Length: 509
Image (cartoon, one colour):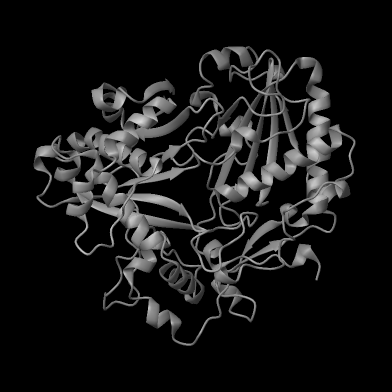
């Protein structure tokens, strides 16, 4: 079977909203190298598409009007592959140093942006990205790229649809492109390089494609924990109205302030130390001897951010934090890569969605109280991850629910009704080797301390998924950045929070 026509979307792909996500890789680049850089990137992209024609595919969503056939349900996904994918896929090239509009890019230099911390305010998706914003793509192509030049530097923006790949999958695809660019610079044969990426569409992970049995949906649909793991609205569970729609999503505030904060390895070590429970706390938390015995650095950081952000938000809620109803809860969502937790495990070379959500609830007064230890919050998060997102049988049932939903063309609703209210949505790519992506000796350098070939900065488009707390990839020096969006007065409170600012310093906005 031809690989181009064999790609099969998993049930976890099909329940994902069709949002586009983008990474912007920032490199110093002498003006004299512009043509060479563009040429290598285009040749590398052509080689990549020749090897993986599915990356030239355009997303097609089956609607209810298409009916149900043996190969899909309403809302199921497929790819339209052009007859000549290599000819079709072209790198978009944009020289902003020659821009004649009033955007200010003509006089903007890479050195100036480097000195300012590569601010988010300059990461304009309309200028830098093939997909301007996360919701709409002009081409619908599942892999799109744009190269933008400014004085002394360049940006490589790579976009993919979240129904095609998760964040790890995007990094794998960019790494494949980088490898093609290295091969061309080294004049090596593609056949001479061992490529661990499996043929897409072959050897599909069995854990993601279970056989649907009669009655699966009715058997599984009334288990809220499965909808929660899938990041979907579970609030309709138990209703007598079978047509009840999902909970409405609250619109974001009109004015948002987004800042990037940074923390050192020592800061992370201190946060982890504060969050690590004593043996007495572990025993007190564990009634049935099944609770967590340890916490991770990610757990600790999530707990610290959750507490700090809700403290900053709470005074803005209808009459202030003093008027929060007794027992009112806040929920935090942690995105979990399920590749190793499923049975059998999913290979790391699989680029499709294997993301689950671990949801944790705590009373707001407990979460924000100065008397509550960080270890209490962290243990609650670790318990949720351990009991749900690391349970292979539970994850398997969640996948089975996803594949048995009869119609995914209708809005399934989100587990989070707001990204700005009482709940906090987090995502972390801290451990993804984005700063190690090596495009070859032509890239980078130019007075930078960054090793040749790898990006000096990694950013995301301004305004992309405002409200989600996004932990960025760990840099070569161990520093980690965090993107936070709040209402302006809430951001002021966060920055003035001594406990928060002791460990996270504002880098840019």
